[in-house]
Length: 568
Image 1: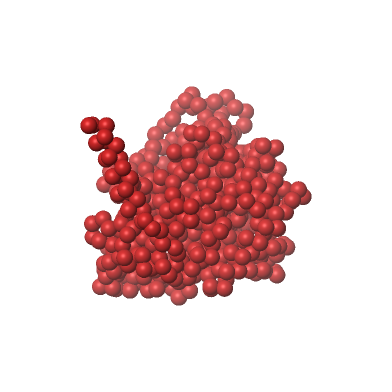
Image 2 (image 1 turned 135 degrees about the vertical axis):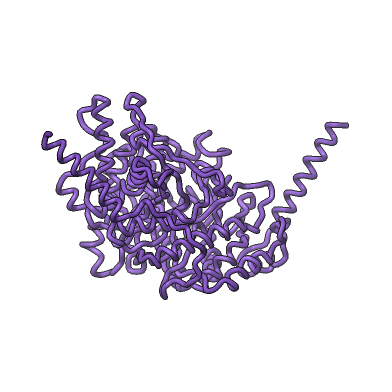
């Protein structure tokens, strides 16, 4: 047997042993609800992002982002919606902070729009002081209300100029341009901001922006584009971490991390080694793609093996997965003060071989199939099934895989599809929060180092290629009204009680929360005109007259009148 073959067999054995010892795929304990509380100092909050909530897309010197351009192209977004105005958070942030204060948030997560600070993407061209002032005011008001800002530097809104001139994240020059932007943010805001997130969910930026084309900038570079974009994003993250570490950390004493989206992959058959390997491959191609270089210095071995083998079968001289030099590996390894985890759902995973002749694709490179259980609840987004036990599994995987890092849950929540009249009694969201937060509590009991939880999201907002057709917010936003008023859903009161109790103190009290939260709306389908909601809205935001429901009734009456007129 050749030495090379022996090394491969030895590596496969090590993989198998480490998977079984570090994370036991054959156990999936789905125990009963756990009553208990979180550690003192656990941080509760909610989040949003610049493009999704700010509006003011061309105001006060802001430059164009790739999402401004992408959303303005017909057919790219559901119903051709854009975030030109969205929640008008640029003008209404003071009202929103009042909502946060009422809920007693410990933190609020938001992103800084790169083109609002550098309209052309480049520091040397122009710094927009009006954009600086907006974020100054937002940060200062949060702190005045004892709410800690957690700031994301990149939530997908690359300056359009950098895409047009250089090809965006396909070009290595983005590493330095992004570092210049981050460095200015550290300089201007770092005396007050102590928690920085370099990138939000780079998986989506890479795969949906450069592989499938579903997201901005809409490129379909199958089998190469996502890997190349991710390679530059990882290097950009590392450079920004080092910039903070060498220039700012001693003075500002903050932390720099990254937020990775991480759905869980569960083997269809936990007694089948092929399914177990496929499930781990799913997680490694998803979260591990970014986490493994940041914690260990290089891509997951399974990615290098699979993509390298398929590239060779396709007659390519080198792998489609780029390679880090030894110097880059050392530079990237350890560039994470905390790990942000965005988690929404779970998939069952089984092995499936895709012949290399079927073309290059990130998805076929993985040799697996994603499945769902039809019994899983799916109240909104077609991809989002409520599978709470997967959250605990994921958090324990992170603990064993990456040495139990400090974790902040940076996104977790559930949507609903927009209906003609929106029901504020979002019982499915209350159930989702209860179940998922409880699984996080169990993970803490397992020894996972989770420090905070961010509900996604504070407000209904622009949901990328789905436009305004899906709503994740704790607060309903009336997008048809130019003032974009906010209305609390029942989940506001429910989440507020979780925060005030710092968890789930006892069964009797927890069971009363849902009842109290839904007292503001009837058990069936009471809508926005509910008196208790209106009285609350007088305190925290403006009242819309007529209400959305009244408008629905009027529209229905007009529609009926036209039908009758046509009939007779």
